[in-house]
Length: 76
Image (cartoon, rainbow, N blue to C red; front, top):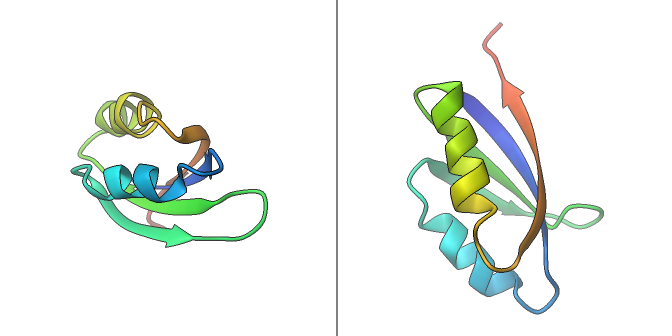
């Protein structure tokens, strides 16, 4: 399963949070953005349950990650 994860970060903690996000196994790319979201992550896991765990426990568990929205992708 692949997904794009939109992340809102806490002001002043952006760099520290993103360094931790980059180290998570399953996070392939991190893109900084401007606007409503501060970063977009490309993430991948074997199953939807593992992907959910990666996002909920690991990404959201990082101090400095305020909120996320996940866009799960499918091959067409």
